[in-house]
Each structure stands twice: as C-alpha cells, then as structure tokens.
Image (cartoon, rainbow, N blue to C red; front, side, top):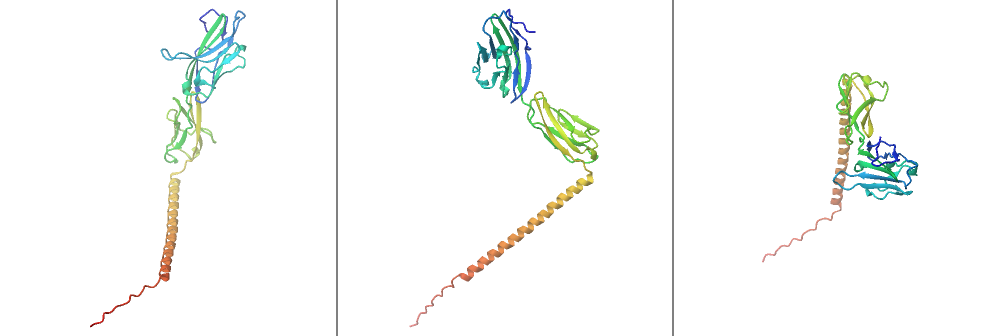
Length: 284
C-alpha cells in the first residue's frame, strides 16, 4: 500500500518498488494504474522520471502527459522507444512501454500522478540483462558401449547464473540410467553407456530473462565398430592418396612430352650454322 507525501484522493493501484528483469532487445511495461476522486478538480498530469543516483546527475523526465497532450522528447537516450500503453491515459492507466531495451536502460523509474489537490508517486526498478546466447552441444571423445559418455553444453554469452538442462527428445524419452547432470557446468554424464542410450538430446540454457537450446545426435557403438570405422576411414584416405599420386604422375609425364616435342621443333626449324671462310696466307 502506498502512502502519498500529501493528503490526496488520487490513488495509484500498482505495486511500489516493483523489480522488473528483462532481456536485452526486449520490451518492458512499467505499471502505473491509478484512480481519481471527485475531489480532484485540477488538470491531470502524469510524469515519468528516471531517478539518478544520489550525488550524480539530476533526475531526468522521460515522458509527460499534461492537459491532454503527450510530451516524450525530454530524454534523448529513450527517444522513439518510450510511449504510454493507453491511447488515453485519463482512463486511469498511466503505464508506459520501453522498447528495444539496452543494458543502459537499467535504473529506477518514478511515476507521479497529479490532479490538484491530489498527488501520488510510485517507483519501478528495471534491470536489463543479456539472455543466454545459442549454446554449443558437443561430445568429447568416443561414445562406446560400456564407457562413460559426457555431453557438453555451453552458452558463450548471457547474464549469470545460467542453468543447463539436458533432455532426451526421441523415444524412449526417459533419461539414461544411471546418468548425472551438472546444471552449472552444462555436462551430462551417461555412465556405463548402452546402445539403447543412442538418440537425440536437447540442451536448454536458461537464465532469469531468457533461454536458448541446441541439439546433439548421439550414437553409442561397440568398441570393435569404433576400430572398424577408423580402419575404413584410414583405408579411404590411402586410396585417395594413391589416386592423387597417379593423376599427378600422368599429368607430369604429359607435360614432359610436350616440352620434349617443343624442343625438337626448335631444332628442326633452326637455320644451319654459317661456314667460316678459311683464309690462308701465301708464303713469299
């Protein structure tokens, strides 16, 4: 319940000192519902102010409703991003919307409703935080039957704390047993893995203002199959290397033949060397 600083018939029904936590890029509605009384005879004024910290810059007006007019050009950082939620605030709704929130919008906002002789005020605390970025789902090492398989999930950005949760999204939907989840580190340990633990798993990263998820397809195989797959991959690489070498040698030999033919053509077309005239001296 709010007690005004002055004797007043105006009554603000919204909660005072309400805390709002919102995500960057989202929107926030700051409530200011009020009731007027017949004793209030003056012009209705609704003023929203962003309060400064003690000893710093003065409080800043951000939007005002007065005598049927709306003035929203006072506060440059919120220009074109703040407006009354109601088309007619006289109806008893002086709430405002803040759009495209940024971390710098965090602060304390005050709504003041005045209609002489009544006046009332409430404040709202807004915190704008970064929701988790899309996390990365990955598996470290191999997933073998009988081994301990560890699924990893990590969101690079986001206001802490971030909680992680792993869920199986294909049949059977039940989690592997035994398994261990670390909600802080984002790891999911499948102990003594079985082939039936194969499937699609989803990790959800969540904080107070948002959530994101990623998907991982998990295939649990026998150790012999792991070696077979590795051998097959190695064999394919060897075959590709041999084919590459053969193609290289074929083009190399072709280039050598072209160079040899070119050299022969030059020798056949060249002019014969000129004979040098021998000069013999006559003996006296």
